[in-house]
Image (cartoon, rainbow, N blue to C red):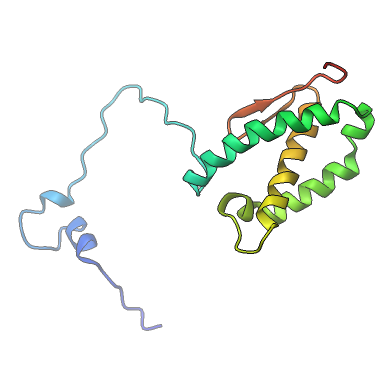
Length: 140
């Protein structure tokens, strides 16, 4: 590396090195006083994130309904939850952005929906991407 620094026209304006009066280079001071809280940050694939939220809000209750037929010890089986967690961790990007390979995104989505449904039976339920899922075992 030669140690050279590269500048864009925008960075020169911000540093006041461009011609003109440099008005675009000055930053305004923030107004004092309380600020509005910023909305929760969304996933990188915002459009896909909204679709994911909608799909999960449909899929998770269906999975909960299926899981109610099983004993609670089976629903909250640590080994199964670990397997689901491993798949979700490995394929999280596929869940958000999709995949060109047939079936990979669907499989990863189904694992996420199953994991959320199982965790909904835990005390206090589970919150994912701002949506809370909670289920009582044995309630139809």
